[in-house]
Amino acid sequence: MSNEEKDLQEQMPTAPQDEYDSYQTIFGDPAEHRKIVPKKQGKKRILGLIGGLLAVAILVAGTVAIIRFVPKREEESEPSVMDHINVLSRKTENISSVRVKNKNGSFQFSAQHETAQNTETSSNEKAIVTTTWSIDGIDAAKTDSGKITPVITAAVDITATRKIASKSAADCGLDQPTYEVEVADAQEGNYSIAVGAVSPDQTGVYLQVSTDETIYLVDQSSVAAFDFEVLDFANSDAIPALSVTEELPDYVSDGQLIGFEKMTVSGKNFPKPVVLAMRKGDEISSIYAYDVISPVQKLAENVDSVFEVFSKGLTVAGAYAYDVSAESLQSVGLDQPTIVLDVTVGNHRSVLRIAKVDDSFSAVITNDSTFIHKVANSYLPFLNYTAESFYSKYVYMQSIKELSGFALATADGKQYAFNIVYNEGAEDGQDFVITMDGKSLKASYFQNFYQEFVGLQAADFNTEKAVGTPEATITLTYAADGSKKTITFTKFSETRVQFAIDGKPEGCITSSAFTKFLRYADRVAENKDIK
Image 1 (cartoon, one colour):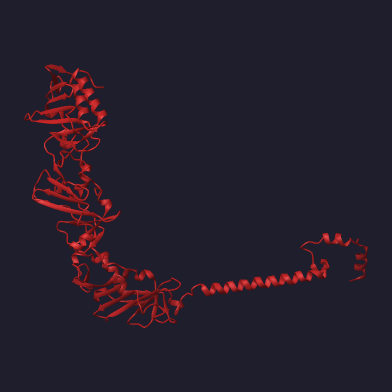
Image 2 (cartoon, rainbow, N blue to C red):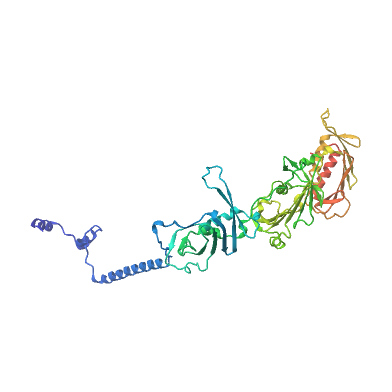
């Protein structure tokens, strides 16, 4: 230090030690501004050093443990061709058969090659070879060749991601393969494939081909086609619609089935078969095309959803069995079907038997099925129908235009006999003339009343015959031939009145609806409107 610098330093004020310490910052030079540390802090420094060493030791040990327990990625023999090693590539047209053994059994697929000349290109082009695959022991008509094709492709075209050099066949599960495949190739020679275990790092499965001693790692998706059940290859062609070629105007229009003559519905949900028949020749038929003719006589509802399986056919998801033996039918419940549909159109008859297997699918056979179809329940909306599902809730539906008389007799002695004359296009604009006891009634009043009658609806379909005499009897007279229809109403309980048509119980209406109807009858008989 120069003399001038020394003089300058001596002239500067000197702060006390404590004040000096307060001026230190993290930006100060430790060599110039450090405090003298008492000796007793040496132990703390040593303990900090030991703690730091322990932390480092724990970190190193954890790293070693992770490396030890994380599966080692399979070694790569040729990094430059990683993820694309061509193991095998054969021409499908040269393959005559492929046998696959998996957890479900051993199955052989056989090829039928058909060669055709390529007419769309020059004569130098190769002929077109079409291959159809079938399963030995199963009628080819019951299987779908297109569903088999992925299995064949997996057996003739193999690409690996790595070659395995450090493991034995046993280490790779190839001594007890998951899949065993045998391929018959008349041109390049036969070979077999063994598929072993999944690699520890889950990046693929081990595979070996008989023509190569090398063990390969292949992607799991490339061998997924070998994991199948034989029913996976079932033909899924739709069950066709009923074909009727002759001219039957009531049932066929432009070659399309539009109706049926008779249908019988039976099964577990039907203690008695329900018989439906087409309704013809009246105005009601435009609204209700079918009648229930057994076990009761009623207008029929919910028929279209059932009829569509015959008019449009039925989409199929697969199969439950390749045969219709008694054992196979019993295995899916078709020995006691959920529902049986038997339809007749002219000289044609078709029967569909359906058994619900689970919440998603049902087993289905027709009268000429050779195997059991698998059909989604969504295509069978009628699966849970009962007899009542087909019953119209209306007590009796009849056009007023077809009647000449409406008579009502009650248990308390009231007698109302309404005469009906229908004059379509009358000059005075009054199409109906209504009289009772020789007196004219306002036609619109009676029409409103009659609307209430045909609007009566069943609250239930209890057909246990009611005890006692009828509370009211309605007699309808038809204008065409004078024939009559009788409807009686008998008390069934405090809240129900049973109605019977020509003496046959059909169900019950509510007591309140019955009382209201009688009140309306009183009003119209007095030539008053019911409203």
